[in-house]
Image (cartoon, one colour):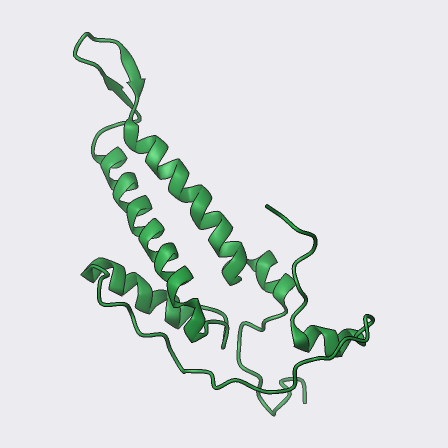
Length: 147
């Protein structure tokens, strides 16, 4: 249930001039260099976890994101399994009486795609989401490439 706009991150309030004049947090949190994969993930899911950690926008993922990232990795592995099952059979299957029907894996794949799309927007895994949250794709360097 939506309750208005999502809160604006503190660094964006500072850049935008803090129009509401509410106090802006000034403490910096310790940011781990990477998230440790939960032990209950399968080996394939742990590979996805490491790939996502490596490819995520610079310094985006924090320790608190572990649970949401676990949901993302689980949905992605189910999506991949459904995609492979459809590839091995077909989009249309036949019931024992001969009538055609959609492959049940198609519904599973579409549902996981919806979940992934929502989570990708939250994590900044799409180009438009990265623009909205203001993250750079590369770490800041002191040197300007145009000098």
